[in-house]
Image 1 (cartoon, rainbow, N blue to C red):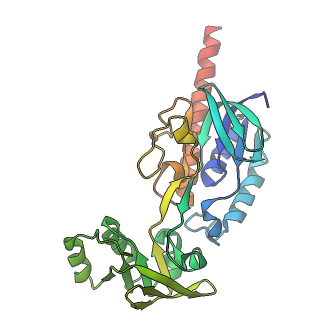
Image 2: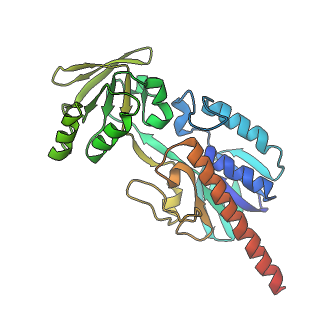
Length: 306
């Protein structure tokens, strides 16, 4: 493809799709490269997204692509971007399948991926009765006996948050002793039990949690689990081309989605730590407006000089 695109969007989750919709409506030539392995594939339902509450990630993507198909300047490529050269106004992006795209601007909507936590039995329940976000899945586990696998400063924070959905929960630090005495005392005052032993296994039947068993033999009966995920950026490319990134792997952007590299934007989970589909979609829309304005202003200034 030697045509110079206006925008290449890398990633086709809610952020990339919403950006594609806005840019398509703004009559920009766009290609969305997506390898179709989203983080939320294990999730059966997407929640908290008005008009789409309860839709599966697959249904969400299907509906989005059908609506975007109305705008002929947006194309989709099932592929993975592997290398980027060039600079603002003329980047070249190469892919796994040997394709090459030239584009004026780039939007990274690559999301984040979960590092597998070394907990025996977690894989079997993840997305069925073990989750990472109470805003996404707390309603389904309301008033149930839960185990919260969390450590350090996040333990107290998570305890406070989860208390809105259930009062029956236990904290497992899984061998971490990073909880301060003050935090332990506060949790104790709220009758929250904390176990520090390593987790031996999560026992379940057909994906439904039954108990969490610790190395010291303690068995904690429960019907659901929330755990603190370990995340990393869904692609190495933002870092490779020089985008500033936080220690936790989030691409640093300004209020309009601009990264520290000219002509490069990022949106959604890749550039935020609020992991909700509706937030990702709104950040995608916001970045698309910024990119479109930048392209229109540049064209305006060029024509003034001719």
